[in-house]
Image (cartoon, rainbow, N blue to C red; front, top):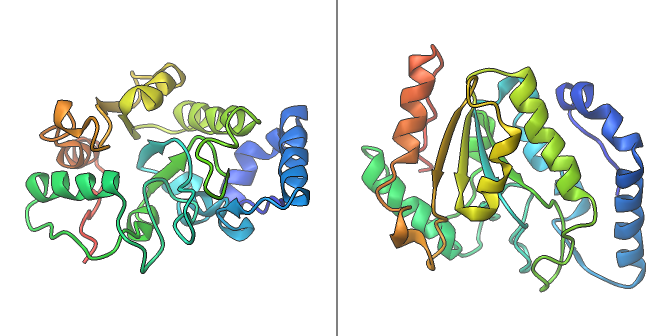
Length: 225
């Protein structure tokens, strides 16, 4: 895995790549490839979230857990899938909530969220790689330490960021965020197993734009059509 991070991110995270945990993470990924594992997303997409949303441009962080582990799904953005791929169940529920929360939102035919990322929505998974067909296979190998530092750095060095934490796993990261500087939105996960227990009706998208507008920032155009 070669690390080619966008320059504004490199300026705040460059020390991480020299730390022992990150060197061990790279060795783990190399060993998996040598064993013949197919790793998602492809190497050039691993840091896609950082390429599309520069450090200086972040307005919102939506935290996911693992990349999708099916063929041609993952492309480095949490909850997002590549063009031409069926929209996964959690993202279908996100679209349903958007339809009731944002006037004029029409459910798109694809699940590619690149347009959000370009507007400043950092679609961050806490683990950035996975073996094909094996959910969670790259957890506890160092990625979480890296992405914890990403969250902490955003909290410390930026102001008025909206952090959207869906589900218990994402909410564990709340301790890394300074609530006096940022807006934290929490609910159950949009997964079909929990969406009806507090995700539907939580209006995270309009709440995000209200907060951004209140702080003199342009809201996100959530429409994808």
